[in-house]
Every structure is written in C-alpha cells, then in structure tokens.
Image (cartoon, rainbow, N blue to C red):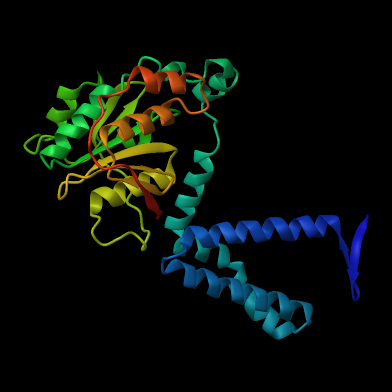
Length: 293
C-alpha cells in the first residue's frame, strides 16, 4: 500500500484521504438537506455521540465502549425512524439526478434528438392563460416536466391527457371548478393530470407572505427536475420556481423565454423557439431575480 504521509504513529494512505473526503462531502450534503429544521440538532447530537464512541473505543475503555456499542447497534433503526422525511428527500434528490427508466436510457442514446419531444409544444397557450389568471387574481400551479411523466404525483390527481390550450387551463383553475385546487402537470405538450398534490417544502427561510401554493412549488422544484409556474391568488404575481430558486414578477415575454429555455435546455433549437414564439412587447415589470430558498 502506498502511504501519503504519517501523523505520529498513524500511516495515512491515499485511500484514507479519499475516504475522509467522501465522508465529509456526504455529511455536508446531509447537513444542507436538514439545515433550517429541527432534525439538524438531532443529527449533530447523534454525530457527536458517534465520535465519542470512536474515541472511547480507540482508548480501549471497555465498559463505556460496551454501553455505547449497544446504543450504536440500534442506531441505524433510530436514524431511520427519526429522519424518515429527510431520508426520503435525500433519496428523491439522488433519483432526480439519475436516469434509470427505459425512456431516459433510450434518449441518452439519441443525444442528437434532444429537444425533439418539446418541438411541437407551443408555449403561447400557457403564457396567455397565466396572463389572464394574473389579471383576475386567480391562483394557479403548473408543473412542466421534460424528462419524466412524474407518475407518482400525477396519480395523486385526476388524469386529463389533453393538449394544452388556454381555455382548458382557464377552465381547470376557475374558482368554481372541482379541479382548481391542486397542480396541473404538463409533459410533452400535454396535460397529464390536474388537481395533483405536490410535496410541500419545509424550508424555514421562505418569506411569510408566501402561502401553501408557493411552498408546494418550491417543494416540487427541490425534489424533481421540473419547472413550476405559480400565479398568486392574493397579488396576481406570476413566478417560476426551479431547483429551489424563485423568479418573481415575470412579464409575459420573460415567462415565455424562461419556459422555452427550460424545455429546450442543451438544445440548438432553444434560440429559434424563443424567436418564433416572441410575444408583443409589454410594459409589465421586468424579472426580479430571486432569493435563494
């Protein structure tokens, strides 16, 4: 074994260095995941207890090692029970960055066809509907997905499977419609389902003026690689959320541009699509770039 350096009587190899580095990265990611919640205090307490156990074991204090060892023996079960929500969120984040389903694997072998699935999707109906909903202070929640049907979330609502149109979106989010309470999921230019239940973010840094609709949009963007459109019922403000980041007070051209950029990301068709769907200039407020949630 090739040793990197020595610390006293310890021989440190390159494998040990990488081992410590990877564990540090993992612990830091877990801390970021739980930051802002009560769970982080439990996590730090459990980590401190485990470090004490390692020191006691290295010092060969047999009685204390035996007591702490018994506690550590059931520690895995305790962690699963105490951190079930955080573990679920962590696994969702891992699954978000990996592509195991058949459709995505086939798409990876056809890199030259990126963006083809969205070529027929006209963004104008969504932009026009959002503008109308905003002017009437009607709340709305629309999820755009370009890599997955989000079946888990779509199955929580009512299946629609229809082409996107302005009138259909206005009908769904009408205050007297039985489908208005929840989110609409759009995939490949079609409305998959309406009245869908989205995961609510537990981030404590979200401003108090944001209600459940914005928290649901933030939670969806944190757990999936999706773009979420929110129309505020109180102010009529149009926002987009992606990867835990808000884009507030969007005008119609800004909204069109960001949705198109998301759908055609890493595709040569992005610039052409933005130009072909360019809307009439407006005097609405420009984009105010957000706040990290």
